[in-house]
Amino acid sequence: MKIAMIGTGYVGLVSGTCFAESGNDVICVDKDEKKIEDLKNGIIPIYEPGLDGLVKRNVEEERLFFTTSLDEAVEKSLLLFIAVGTPPGEDGSADLQHVLAVARGIGRCMNSYKIVVDKSTVPVGTGARVRQAIQEELDKRGENLQFDVVSNPEFLKEGNAIDDFMKPDRVVIGCEDVRTGEIMKELYSPFVRTGKPILIMNVPAAEMTKYAANAMLATKISFMNDIANLCEKLGVDISQVRQGIGSDSRIGYSFIFPGAGYGGSCFPKDVQALVRAAEEKGSRLEILEAVEAVNTRQKLVLFNKLQRRFPEGFKGRTIAVWGLAFKPNTDDMREAPSIVLIENLLEAGARVAAYDPEAMKEARKIFGDRISYGKKAYDVVNGADALAIVTEWNEFRRPDLERVKSLLKQPIIVDGRNLFEPKQMKSLGFDYEGIGRK
Image (cartoon, rainbow, N blue to C red):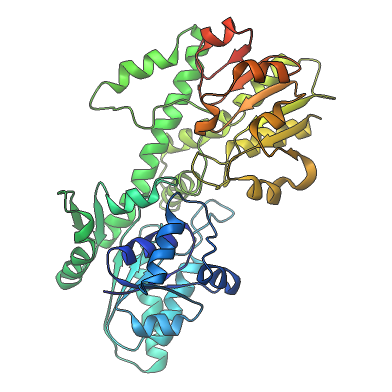
């Protein structure tokens, strides 16, 4: 099929590349000329395992193309995917200006029947607004062209996005026309050969499905963090509790690891957007309001643990930080717990030395020269008064602990991801504290 992927951010680039990998002709469009030029030269703007190789192969095999020309992409394609950002506005609601700008652009250059697909995460009712925006532009041109609007939300986990796209748990398609639904099913058929479902529903239901899914996962995380904090006060080991509840098939083990709070481009903004959408309708989502409040508080947990160890203050102290990205296998620092920790440490007068395998470039954009950076994990530990572990990168799971101890001024580790066993760490002479563990 002929596909235009409008927007080459995380979702657009991964989706477009995976569609090309399955044999489709895909044109990725972005107004950022430098990004498009970089992509043509094989320079990938995001870190996602395996993506660079897929992009290179499909470009070489002439299935994947990059352009700044929306007109060209629309003219040559049947399926037009909108995959631009929907950042939170000042009140937390989703900002649809980029989505609607693309819709108007499509209306200005549409030349035949098209299927316009919302891939961006958008609130209920956006499909109707996209249709209206396109139709208004067609009316200005005096054109009577047919088109359909589809909602096709993505369910990609950063760090595992290619596998998620190629082997989805389900594909959600919101559409009103049977013919359009069959075309979308044909497009996704190569990815569901193991029998995973393609769910056809109406557009508003598909739009809500994306928000509800992310809100549920965020709820599990915040619930577990709240329970972990209580376990600390009661002297209960949260890891045993997690095993006890995770073995219940109604609950499962996914998303019940306690930690330093969730971040990223999806959960924070989607929970906020759903809460604000309810408020606009005169309703309240009190559970999600609590989820948001718990997560905000949880991002302070590591700072509070450090503060208790340095009651005299952080002046003259250096704190090492392992992990800056909001999760492993990505360079994404949007809403990352590391930002909250580091900003609080700096405000309290501490020096911060940080290391992350992939997010150093992003960190420099945020912190500049306010903190120091190490080329290796051990670099930042050398001479530090304590170590805070924020992201569970594999290389942090099995470090040389004797070396870490010898490099630290004091053997203090606060672990926001529970990478180590407290008893073992104590036997090695560390003042060690995880989340909800004793």
